Amino acid sequence: MNQFPSRRAFAAGGVLVGLAAAGHSSAQTSNPDAMSIGSETAPVQLLEYASAACPHCAHFHATNWATLKANYIDTGHVRLTLSEMLTQPAAVAFGMFQLARCENADGPEYFRRLGILFERQSAIMSNETMGGVVASLVAAGAEWGLTEAQVMASLNDPAGRDRIMRSLDAARAAGVNATPTFFLNGQRLAGDFQTPEVMVRTLDAALSD
Image (cartoon, rainbow, N blue to C red; front, side):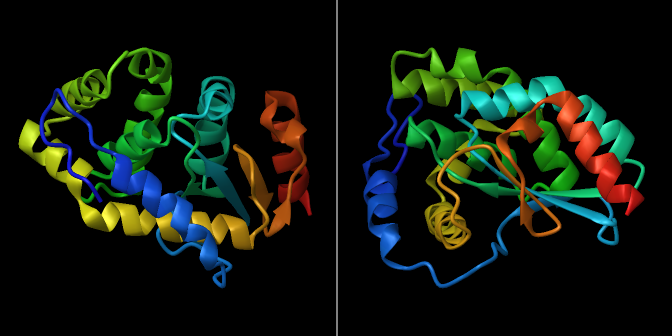
């Protein structure tokens, strides 16, 4: 994996090459690297395959997250697990996920950061250079008490590339090729789950079983 040598340069070629090569293996059916929030004993286990650079994922967060977290996750009814995927520009999605995980963030902190990054997705991706993207990520990290050195170390962490490759393998094994894709208690949900009304109806029905 190539390094991020400075805030004005973003060398992501190694990430992209690694992703292209990752398709050779797909034996695993789950993703131990996924991040979760909510009670481990929640009756509804919701799995989301998402990309930090996916506008549809950002839209789901904007329209559904407040209800999902307050009414279902915080009440112990739903546990949400997010399995990371990369949509173009893949290097930007990778950097955003690395920032969300920076300094071994736990589940709640990861989702808090990722939510903010979804809200700023358009602004981050509007940068004309990868150096501008890095500067945006460093600035966001500073708001969360992360130093530039910590952010850059996270972006350069070779373990991140390996984690993303494992995550993509898990998605392929599950037959996932689009984001966001949701599974509820192991069953794949239709695309209309992304609408607030259908999400609420689906979760309520699952909880009433």
